[in-house]
Image (tube, rainbow, N blue to C red):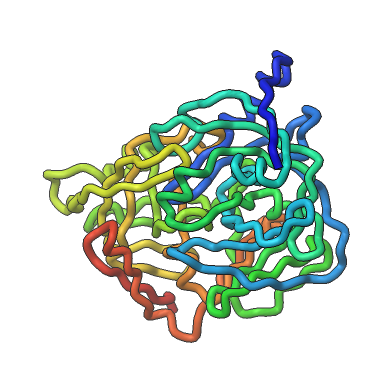
Length: 359
């Protein structure tokens, strides 16, 4: 089906949509970003309301290169491949896929600084959409972003990104052991397992938990980190934490060794450093000799300046199940029978860490 592109010339709506675009960001192979409520006519792009269903439903997911991929149905077309990303504040549909589905997107402009990486990104919007997880309608509009570079860098087909709106609609359980994801209604959910419950720190819409890091052989610092299924990192730290913790200082007693690293986002590749920290403590789960990544800038978009970095799937997937219960301000980490697992991130950092649970 042939589609046509039009430039939307309404100045007020253009400014509003550009403001939305600035909120969209990618972290390490991912899309972490945050947003506040909006009253403009396309607010359903951010907030789609409660889906009407009473029972949980479970579907398999593909776990490829430490990313979670789900199949959505959009306007009756099944098999749309979406990255499940708890770091993205919006649901995103790839611009090329939107054209193939017959949408007439409103292209705004190419912008830098939308996501991590130095490249320009095209931003648009699409409405009159019926996006479904199974039989459940989850969205009637999405932000359109050119995901071509991300698809190439990730070496995986990508039609879109499923972000935080579903965290506000559902309680979501990821079963990493059996590769299943379950969506529960927000009302009436009761957790009956033996997982550790961590209270989320209130910082806008972020899924933020307190984490303790050793930033040298004799230094420990507390950090507030986003739980980000869109990032395949262990932990990535922003410049605000790097500066206050002195983790990147060299030449002092007990200093850690830095190693060059790289990552990619919507905007392409960007440089990092990696360092192996003596330990990292999340709740009662302690990780030793763990590779951590240092990003020497702090993202400008949305609420990222209020957090110190992200925890990615290289940590989250060590657990058997992870329950994101954002409506009740908590996350539940259900341990495997044995937690003496290796943290292998040797492609990006020197060293393989270990993990176990404190008594």
